[in-house]
View 1 (cartoon, rainbow, N blue to C red):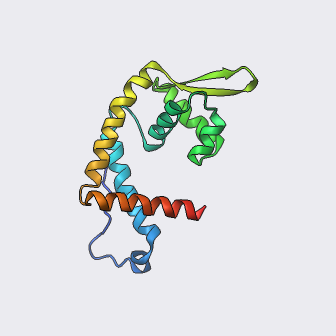
View 2: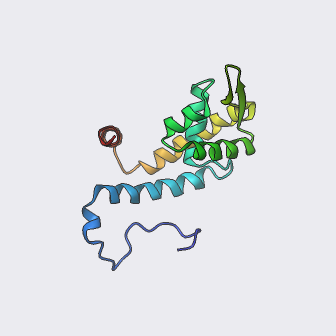
View 3: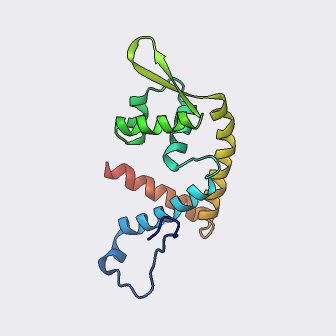
Length: 155
């Protein structure tokens, strides 16, 4: 499959066997569709789901350290470094020295990051509404609750 080809969740003539009975497989198929639409919807900003999550978390937690961001996002510290590097290159995030710990850096959004986050958030919310439009509002709420429950119980 080429990178530009959209994901096809059900290829005609293919027997998926036990995969069709697995919750994880269904979630993964849905996640791929959500990811593709997310990236297309936010291409003008170069924002991916992890980048958006990092921007939101940093914007709501002033002084957050890189190691804390990694923990919150469930990624390795090296992954958080790559993520923050990308956001710095886009002009959205900056590192500040932590006076009490010379090895650590706190994270903050730049003025551009703060300004663009409002438009980016609006685009994410439109994407989310579009992707969930086949579900009634109460079904959307229930699905979010179930997915959160699975995530919390699985830990």
